[in-house]
Image (tube, rainbow, N blue to C red; front, side, top):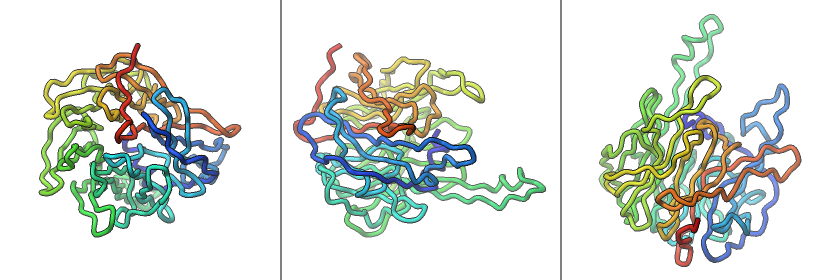
Length: 363
């Protein structure tokens, strides 16, 4: 799934349409990217950057999935239909990936109400932003790819030279140079997912071909990295920093797929040092990924899909549960708003800040 999504991000995106009301209501709110892909036609590519009819927007809903509002979208900006929005710790700013030029993505930020959109100068050619709690820094992913010229006499030998890798970077939102935090390496992908509440550590998912995902913690000052959890990914610090939620298929559950069994990840919660990990979702036929903590630390929101490789989110739904996994409920499902479009949802992110805590769910 990660490899395919990286290819999509590397290609770039296009979007169009109209922007709805941007006012962000008070109280608990969830944000996520929803997209609509135009119907595929015979002989026509399905790559997102080749579909001028693609619509992508950041929307918010209340804790029950109601009161939907479009926060950011066309014509103000051409959003990338991949990944979750990123928020500063006080909920005052949001960062997101959008089209920054021909066939490239960059990171932008805006005020909490969706106004004041501006590019982050050092975060061009990037995707998957994570804002530091104080809003001064942004971590992001950059991709390097090389596709060799195919020799028709020996295409397999040509493909042996195909190169694809991603690395995690950090930069000031106000300017200056970006700094690379993880190494390049063909078949090695590093995706930042969460800052610690004090902003000193950055959780990074490392995915290497033919190996399970793992979580590294990077000291953002010294740059030192340490492996903290194997067979895990998408780590997210709780608001008070005492716990971490992450996804893993360490229990080796799978579901039938087109080319064989597909690993189905579940969500786990552990102490901040990754000790005492316990599983909080139990759906062998579904994959849960990309958890986000509500500001009060009582709920998790995440993306649930019936196929772990549904990287476009066409079958994904936004789900909430208490941190112990109880009272699970779906609050948003893909819904086409144009006739014939293929709707998609990406991972959710709770809007942080005073008055935004959702409290536990009552079953």
